[in-house]
Length: 78
Image (tube, rainbow, N blue to C red; front, side, top):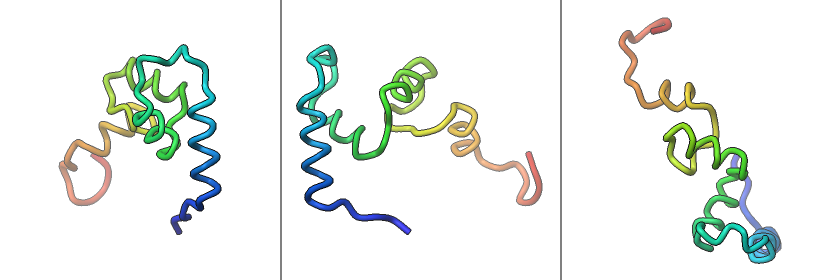
């Protein structure tokens, strides 16, 4: 079951993003907000960049390729 964001949750997220250090100037404010809303941590973002994964992927590279590659057989493992 998906949980909805409340106004206070959104305010908290926006305040956290705005108050972050200025070391992350490369990343736009909008992208930071999207990343926070999608739950992608700084560590995950670095992992995604290092492994040529979409910036908003929240998992391993193996899981990503398993998701995008079509199944060879309709049953069982590949």
